[in-house]
Length: 340
Image 1 (spheres, rainbow, N blue to C red):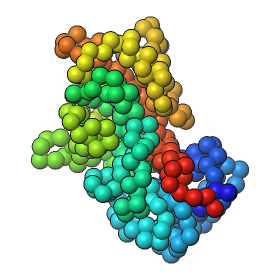
Image 2 (tube, helix red, strand yellow):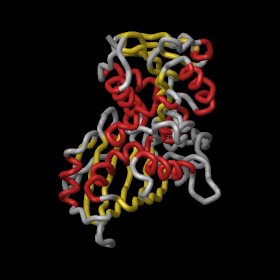
Image 3 (cartoon, one colour):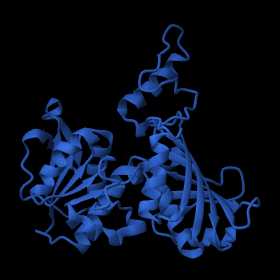
């Protein structure tokens, strides 16, 4: 006995990862459908040892299906997610469309799984931004112990967060550096990404921050605690997969770095790799394909009374998107939905 599951956007990076993770984690599936736009109709995708042919999203009937994992942009989600929800299928949406709707829960299962019951409001659950998801997994156990007052975060985000075209641009620009006459001009990004960093993700707002930075602030408050002050600087780096974050935390109560290390070692979804020696930390290339949020470089911030610094790394296509969506489905299934 299991659930009837739909993956919407099954040919994209995140959609493919959703199918992979559903199979890897042996999510109880009675039936599965892979949906894509008409231009990708019939494309084959993998689900465990099975091969699925994509079906047309535009004509698909969600009636009788239990859960739909959405991995398409906000514009398309705005059209199709309400149709799925109206048919009685619970939508778990990876776009930013519903994250800030007060009636729709924004879930990171290690942090606020209890909120999943609020899916009944609109039959929709929102998946957070990739950079927010990994950060709040690391912050939650420390917040429970010492109450976090303020977070200052700088991100180092991989190009896979933008999509396949961005990954191709990094690859082609890198190759072009070594072949005279083969240089590749920026198209996806406003400046060259190969051998460079770009302090600009998403659009600029009137405040001077980018929307990605605003998202981290708004989502952390909604998921973890509205009282926490957050300021972010989000940077795109020439890494294919894996987001990294340098996080500075100020707490109400003093928290020794060794106790923080012990707390994080016991925290769900977190793996601590923290030796004070060369190589005793995690880097993005090492987290690819892994489920965990890795924390390293845990140390006291001596410039304030109750301060900590840490380094946080995670596979953005997994914990930052597909894995978190599947984990939401697991919580939804175990707590709210009947099998079969």
